[in-house]
Image (cartoon, rainbow, N blue to C red; front, top):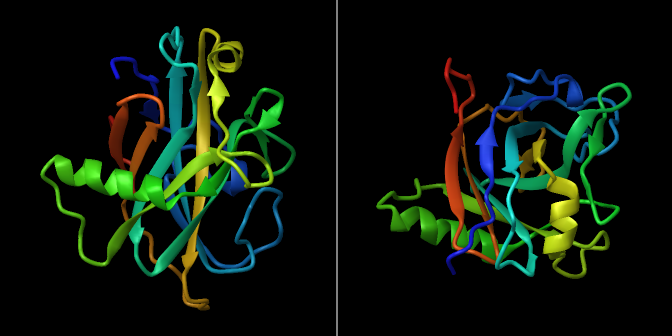
Length: 211
């Protein structure tokens, strides 16, 4: 397909969600008190955080589209996804992006993980031993079906452009009390209606001039 759903990685823009500064992309935590939208506060976990921008665009040629994201993580870790945040809410909570009056929600997708793996290897890069791409696709709130957004729904939300933050948390596949040592994570953004995809790395320490 010749049309793209244009989206670009950015540094996070919202300070303080989950008590993380906007300059923090990767951070590991011990269990802590409950924060709304935080999925693994009771377990050792590693935050994976990035920002992205959906610039103003026509979405011509796209009737419906599901958003996709995958991340290269250690095979011993599982990842869960938080909603997309557009502002800081009370305390350490975030305000979620809504499309068609619903929070953008995600569900695990083996297909998206496999797609990211193939796209990554097509560039001549090898997936390191002991790592895998964990994939997600937008879904309905009950996680029973893929949620595709119409061109009209996207135009109403994106408008002149939209900046967002995205958070994930990684925990052990096999439950463990061991802390997770932070490590760099590669992200793939794509969709199911165009040929668009982009890879970028989230370092444990941000360098000047990142992105």
